[in-house]
Amino acid sequence: MILDLLFEITGWLRETFLLDLAFWMMETSLSLFMVENFWNVPLAQVVHIMSIGAAFGALIMLSARVHGKAAETLPMDAVAARYVPWVWYGLLGIVISGLLMLTAEPLRNMINAVFWIKMILLLIVVAITLGFFKSVKAQGAGGAVQAASGTRVTSLVIIGLWLLIMLAGRWIAYIPV
Amino acid sequence: MMYPEPTNIWESIEYSGLGIGIAESLWAFPMIESLHVMALVTVFGTILIMDLRLLGLASNNVAASKMSSDTLKWTWIGFVIAAITGTLLFASKASTYMVNPYFLTKMGLMAAAGINMLIFHFVTYKTVNEWDTSGTLPTGAKLAGILSIIFWVVIVFCGRAIGFTLGIYY
Image (cartoon, rainbow over all chains, first blue to last red; front, side):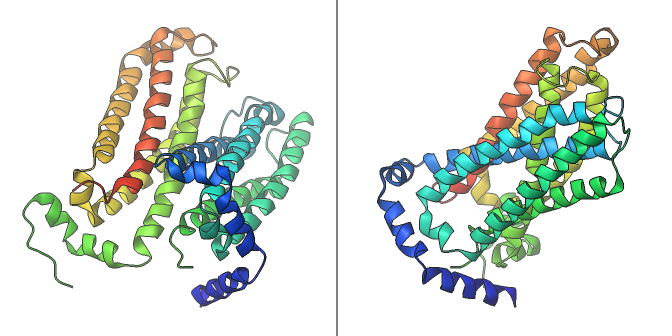
């Protein structure tokens, strides 16, 4: 059962240095600042959600172009030039707001199997995305109207991984730890 | 578990089989909420892309009408899923939501965002042939774009604020 496995991982996390690190983080002035004002955590979450929206919306439109279903008149590298910066700046917003949320509630996040599953998924999607962008730009510069089938599939994998990351993100708050 | 006799329509929804089912399930609310998040970031992200085009700040090499048809299908898919999941979340705590000022503000702003979209579509968009491929759009289009961004940012804020204030209002 998946819940038992998650419990086991969380129990193991509790035995590592992460527990001491979490307690240390809770004493930092940034952590105290985040929790002493009622609105700080919700506002960080709003920035988090809007950053995900900016990056995810850009990925949807680039994926649509790669499939030949949006902005077909433009070369793929021109469309990539429009959306790629929004993915990376969106990710920057995600990371900054995420670090603030993590600092506010270090125990709830770091001693939580779902949080680390989410972090691993995030690293995987970033690695795949780097290759995907490179490939789309190269094919666009080469004059291809539509991307190769492998590139099209990769774009769907990236979208799917982001949906899983969002699922994990919401479940951090609900999984019993 | 026993529930009190409903005294108004919101309590009737909350104490319906659907409302109780979602509220009592360990996984239903988080799972529906997760779908709600996936749908709303799709709505927010694709609307933002269209709004920036209306403001002439991005994608000026794509015609406004083309950008509209490219983004709007994703916006609508996201919106329909967000509306269905939102209704289910509402059903599980209807009377608590109906006294929450952030929930009521959110509903009002969604209506405003809808009216903004209708005005743009039926008034401003009539002259689209004159400015479709231009980077400088008429004031009406720019106004629709900036209002849309403001509405949706505040809608997202209200959505998150609801979750943080549920126990405060009765």
